[in-house]
Structures are given as C-alpha cells and as structure tokens.
Amino acid sequence: MLKMKTEKHTVDEVKRQILDTSLVVASVIGTIAYLISLFRWINYGFHISFIINLFVLGGVILLTVFRSRLSIYLKTYVIIALIILLALADSFNYGILSAARIYLILIPFISILYLPFMRTIVVYVSTLLCFLVIGYLHHAGILTIPREYEPGMYVLQIYPWVIVAVHISVVAIIILLVTRRFIGTYTGLITNLESLVKGRTEDLEAAIEELTATNEELYGQREELETAINSLHSTQKQLIQSEKMASLGVLAAGVAHEINNPLNFINGGVMGLENYIDENLKEHTKKLEPLLEGIQIGVQRASEIVTSLNHYSRHDDLAGIPCDIHAIIDNCLVMLTNQFRYKVEVQKVYTTKTYTLICNEGKLHQAILNILVNAEQAIKDKGTIIITTNLVKNRIAISITDNGCGISQENLPKITDPFFTTKDPGKGTGLGLSITYNILQEYNGTLEFESQLGAGTKAQITLPVTNTDEP
Amino acid sequence: MNEKTTLLYVDDEPINLKLFVINFKNKFNVITADSGFEGLSILKSNPDTNVVISDMKMPGMNGIEFIRIAKKDFPDLPFFILTGFDITDEIAKALQEGLINKYFRKPFNMHEIEISIQEALNNSCIE
View 1: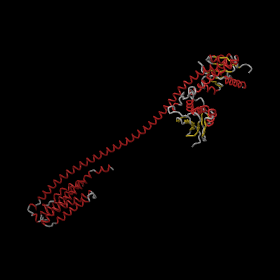
View 2 (view 1 turned 90 degrees about the horizontal axis):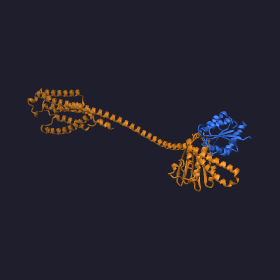
View 3 (view 1 turned 45 degrees about the vertical axis):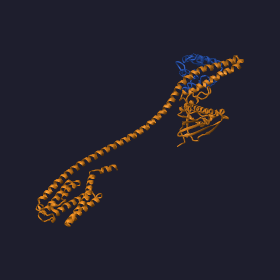
View 4 (view 1 turned 120 degrees about the horizontal axis):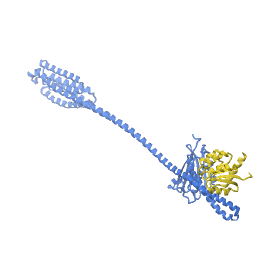
C-alpha cells in the first residue's frame, strides 16, 4: 500500500497539480476580470465578446469544479481550446487592441506539460497563423473594431500584428524551452530516484529475508544445542556413576580375592580345630563351641560382604533367560514371610498382559529382594507395601511403594551409592540398592525413587521386554 | 571305592595347602603342589590320582591354564577350581567346555566339596 502511494508522487502527479492549481487561479482571477469588464457594458453598451468571454469563463469554472473527475488530457485539450477561443475571439473583435492576446503565451506552456513537443508546436503555430490572419482581415478592412476604440492609422497596420506575434512567441518559446528542460530533468531525477529506491527496497527485502532465514537457523541451532547440552548432562551423570562403579569393580575384585584367602585360612583353621576337639578333647566341646561358632559366624558374615562386592566386578557372565517377574516377586515375598509377618500388609496389582522378559532370574531376584527388604525396614511399626506391574512402551514397569518413614531429599540421590546407609554401624552394608542398581543396569533396566519424609517411598523399576501383545 | 581316594590340591598359599590337608586327611589321601608346574609333574608321577582341585590365581600359570594342560594327559580325571574370586569369564568358559566339573568359593565349604567329589567319582565309575 505504502509503495503505491509513493509512486503517485511522480511527474504526472506534479503535472496534474500544476494544471488543477492553474484552473483554480484562472477561475478566480477570470471571474474578477469578467466582472471588471462589465463596466464597459455600462459605459459603451453590450458587445458579442461578453457572451464569448462568459462562455470561456463558464468552461474554466466547470473544468475547475469537475477537475478531480476529468482526465488530464481532456482538461488540457479543453483549456487549450478555451484559451485559443478567448484570444482569437478577442483579437477578432478588438483587433490589435485586444487584451486577451497575451493568453497566447499560455498555449505552449500548458501544451508542453501534457502533450508531445511536436503537437505543441503544431497547435501554437496554427494559433499564431490564425492570429495573423485576423490581423490581415483588420488591416484589409474586412473586420472592424468598435468605434469607441478610435482606430487610427497604426492600429490598422499589419506591422504591429507581426511585432505582437513575435514578442508573444519569444516569451512563449522561452517559457516552452525552460519548462521542457525542467520537466526533462525532473522526470530523469524522479525516475532515477525511483529506480534507486526500488533497488534499495529490493536489497533491503533480500537482506530481511536473509536475516529471517539466519534467525530461524539460529533458533534451530539453539534448540539443537540445548538438546545436546541436556543429553551431555545426563551422559555425564551416567559416566560419573559408571566411573564410580568401574573403579569399585576393580577394587572389589582385588579386595574379594585378598580377603577370601585369609578367610579361607580362618575357616580351614576352625574346621581343623573342630575336628581335633571332636577327636581328642570331647570334654572341652561345650566350652569351646561358642567360641568357634563366633569365629565361624564372623567368617560367614565377612564372606557374604565380599560376595556382594563381587557384583561390581563382573557383568556379562550370566546369559539371560525368559523370566516370570510375578513368580520372582512372589518368591521374594515367600523368603521375607518371617520379616513381614504381623508387620507388613502386601497388596499386589499385577498386569495380565503378555510379554517376554529376558534376564537372569537369580540376579533379578536379588535386585527385587533388596528393594523389598528396604521397604520393610522403612516401616517402623505396621504398614503396607503395594507392588504393581505394568506394561509401558515395550518395558515392564515394577513399582514397589511403602508407607514407611521415607527418605530425605538430601539423601535421595545417594541411596544407590555403594556403602551409603542410614542404618546403625553393623546393621547394613549400604550395598543393597547399589547392587540392585548395578544388576538392573546390566539388563538395560532403570531404577528411580520418589520419596517424601514421613509419607513413604516409591521405587520404580523398568526393564525392556519383547513380544508384547500391545499394538 | 574301598581304597582311599587320592586328591591333588594345587595352591600357591602354603597355609591353604596345610589347612586343606588337615581338614581332608581323614576322607582323602591328599597330595599337594604349590604351582601348576609342580601339579603337572606330580600328576605324572602319581597316575593313580582320582581327583584334582586347583586354586585359580597363581603365579606363572593360573588354575585353568594348568587344568587345560593336565586334561590332555588325563582326560577322564575330574577337575575342580577353588577360588577366592567370584565366577569370571574364564571359569564360566571352562565350565561350559566341560574342562572343570565345578568351581568352589573360598572360604571353602567342606560338605559341598565332599559331595561334589563323590558325585564326580560316581559318574566316572558309571562311565
């Protein structure tokens, strides 16, 4: 829209404005001039020129009134015709004493604005010839001027007509040339400017388009970067955890071997002692038995801790087989019957969908048992453990929710760290959930906890499954 | 099975060897070696050996390497590993190949070892 409006400020628009302004001026001054001329009517009586002048004035006023509705060419032709009529009729009536002859100057000026150069010359030359013909008619006495003009010798000569024609032509041609030159220059400038502006606008539009595209690209890149950073963050977390586990694995393997050998010494020694007492010191058995038993329990406990450490050092030694997760959970619950009795009420919501879970049954058993033991231990007096299984997007989700004491937000991220425990020394190794985490990772599973202090904890396991009956 | 079963125990720790002998001397005729190399030479000089138990981690030649060589000369002899480690890839592979009958964990369980040896010997008798 803006562009259309700018284009109207062209040479044509300026020409139209000149013409319209000239029309308004001609109407106003023409009316004043006509009213003044009416004094002659009072002094010398009526003349045909009053009718002609009124016709011309009327024409100009009509053009002025309808100037915005008429085409520029129609206005140009009509106004030129009216000028010719006014000037020639005046000369016809009043001869060389005509006042309106001066308007002949306007013909080339107006014509050059709107018509081609050659047509302007033709119109002007024809008008001038008509003017000279009228002059000859006066000179020859065929035409007469009103008596009150007192026509003398000079007035009836042909010579003053030529002088007037030449003077008018000089002024007219100067105006014609100057105007023509101005129009030419102005048009050139405007065209130049227009093409310049057009070029610049195109450049700007291209630049804007380019900027928009670049901007979009940048937005895309920013999104990509954000995604990359997020995945880097989670990879970093996983790496830190893996690194912890890996170094622990190396340590665990060494420690396991180094501790198991001395444990073997103690164990072997105790067995040897037992046999010896059995054979040779039967009467001391009663007193020595508790001592030996204490040593054996110590060895057994140390050995169990070392065995659990071994989970960090090996990974892919046990191939998976199809497992029934519900049977495994039920089996764990059977094992915990003693601990759960009179204390924990278990609610089970098992999925009925079919799927195949490939895992090591023993390890999965251990992983779930650890979580169940923790849930039971979180319950101080009496409570509920809800176990649900569900199939979500090719994964089996197992959630174990207790209404026990809960885990503080501070401790929540640490609970799968090896050796992290809130239990009293000797009551827990801090390895249970760490081992669970490790086992689940080995089978591409996940382990997440949600907990609220005083309200309970929800442990959420997911493991990949195949052959689901989901679409 | 009237005669006492002869058992070769290979371990680089002298205390382990000593204790093993003390604990099993009533059940088996225990002979010992402190490395795989010695184990191989003892097997050659005692061809009537009925069963072999070896430690896993030993300098020079580990338990599986020792058994792999020994098995060539004594293909029918039952071999066992007694290790301070948990199962490793190497042990798992040996189990799969039938190179060893079983692996025991340290600290050892006398009862488990006795039963396993008994089973292995019974099987070889049937064969």
